[in-house]
Length: 273
Image 1 (cartoon, rainbow, N blue to C red):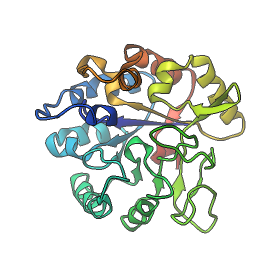
Image 2: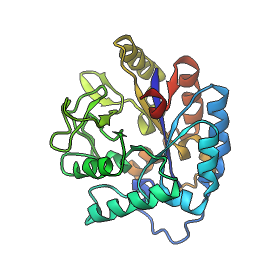
Image 3: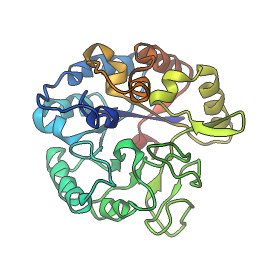
């Protein structure tokens, strides 16, 4: 059994869009793809965890009912898709946890940091999550990229503590589900989703999922809502690298995820735990 997280975001939430454009009109569009995503999961008899940016539920409360009523899990992705290492964000994070608790009737028990920004400098978030009744996180990317990464972290699920987020802590009751990686030509890279699932041949991802499953570990995968519904995702002129990372092969994401759901078993973090 493997884990599927859907980072449910709007077109204006991705970091590389936020930093490159001035956003004045935040008209919602990607949320209109919720039924397409739910239908895909239903077709493949798959449950998923929706890591939702809180302002979307604030603006469209019916999203919560659709997700929960279809048997999926609701989880926290901050209120406005803010990196944990944003300036002076720590106090705001605690306030956002309270807001999200009210918005979701205290149903959220899992968290994913935007841009996988949980690292040794932002490990304070773990203590905040525990105080608010959360039981797991899925923000650790055990690689090093230009935007994120904890390269020495464990690659399979483990117990995490704010004092050391890299190694299993037997005394902790808080779970970490790190994102799937693979090794190509001796280099460890992400294979869990996003740009990597859009760019890598599915062969490498399938091979890594099978390898984890043979060891009785789940593969933790993710996909953005806007990658599954590119018809609702406007395109902006970004610097070449940022444009490539954001939009490359986006039109093929849905079919790639559909293939993986057809060949492997996936469920939500809640049901797995």
